[in-house]
Amino acid sequence: MVSNYLPALLFLGVASGLAALLLVLGSSFGRYFSRAPEDAEKLSQYECGFEAFEDTRMKFDVRYYLVAILFIVFDLEIAFLFPWAVSLDTIGGFGLISMGIFLAILIVGFIYEWKKGALEWD
View 1 (spheres, helix red, strand yellow):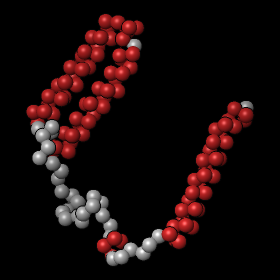
View 2 (cartoon, helix red, strand yellow):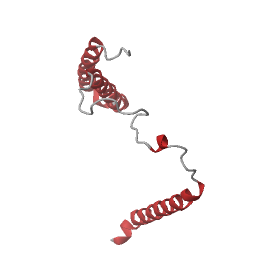
View 3 (spheres, rainbow, N blue to C red):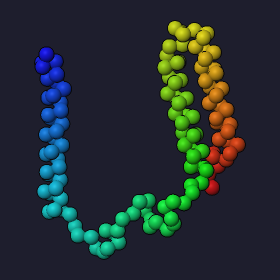
View 4 (tube, rainbow, N blue to C red):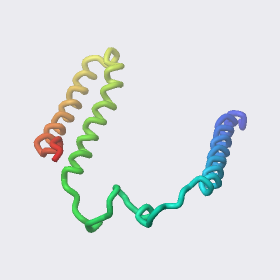
């Protein structure tokens, strides 16, 4: 019974050993090859490459959410179109109609995005 799990345990052991080795090598050689920062600006924290200039609780523009919806629309469409196209000969007319309904719903979402201006980059 244990022999069934031996490849997985061997993989976990090699991966853990390699991770530990890389951590030790990085921490030991990092001290010798790193250069000291020239000024305090390089040690300052940043999130997007510039200093925070507004309150963190500010309201986001609705375009961020529209771009997220747009990503979901296209991501779902691609994720479901490939298996559908591969198995179209076996699912027949019912599959064709159901995919047509699915694509119609996605097209309505795309039109909503278009009307709201999410595709226009200012």
